[in-house]
Figure 1 (tube, rainbow, N blue to C red):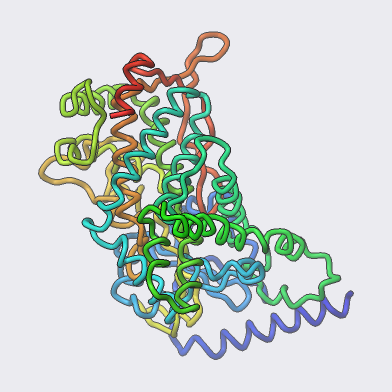
Figure 2: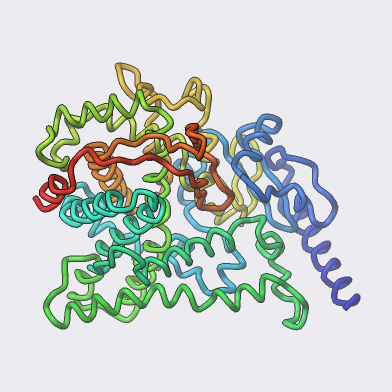
Length: 498
């Protein structure tokens, strides 16, 4: 046992010294905290709300900072300008994803969001762009968006105390329907349960501070008998992603066979002549989109409800706008969007207040680079701190105030949709559909419900906060709310049936 540990330390030391000697080329890396021999900044890596820790670090080290863990350089970008310098201006060099050892060990790296630069990524993105890439294409899925939004409203009206569950059910059901034509159960759907479990595992397993193997990949070379939590977890988690990939796809195959298939993403592709390679790209592309997209929309929807309860004056104002445009005899639809500027401002402010993926999914450099006089080694892991960008006091004065008016008038502040869905060549291909879902679900919620504070057993209001939780995908703490319908059950039934 001791000899294995000694050999391990020796290998890491040799790799680190060799890496530093060969790669600096006389140009310094970006500034950052001083590390220890061999392990570098391993013990500086945040294990909680990474984005807040990195934001504090940037006050000392600036908008481009670096940390080193073993032979790996980690770059954190804290302004929109620097993110664009890397991911747009140098997009060809920073369009890939880093190797995440836990994802590789679990064989989850074929997921669309984790694909590295190369032909598979190019072909998969093209497949998605052909179906979702323009406004006109996204609009072909508006009927499914409307139908699923009505189901969400129905669920919240029935059991408002289960709001969080309904948010996740809604986002999962919508993505399943668009990708596979799969019509989820209103509650306790088994595929949605699998998707939510996979998303949680992804967030836990891919965070840099969750497992030492993510920072020190050589640990995977340790013998199987060596007691390592990551290997035990990887063995447990490996089959779950493949199950999620293939389970809903079986529904698409069956519906095509019996002639009942909707025009979902997979149904459209399966109707074509595809090679085995294309079929696998479709499988993993759809599975990765299901695993990566459901949580983010659900979190944004729940955040909206919290913020409406926390800010009754804003809730009343945006609700009055919806009523003035849509009246009280129908539910909102997509043609109303252009006439609801304050609602659109509210949506932007919700998205800005809590970016669901605060550090975004990291990029990696394909080759050595020099930017702003700093050396960026090949294989660096590069994060854009979206949370910090969204709370930049220069771009957003008083950034912790919930203020939709910042996006109105002659000089609106920066639109968070410019960055929350990614920047450069790895932007989210489903962003138009996600934006549409957020709009129609927010609008219907305002039309149908009053959203206020719940009270405790003493009659005192329970005031929530936007309490973000650690993880690649940042959940929000649960709070009870007082959600009451503005229509009788009979009136609501008529509106939902229209």
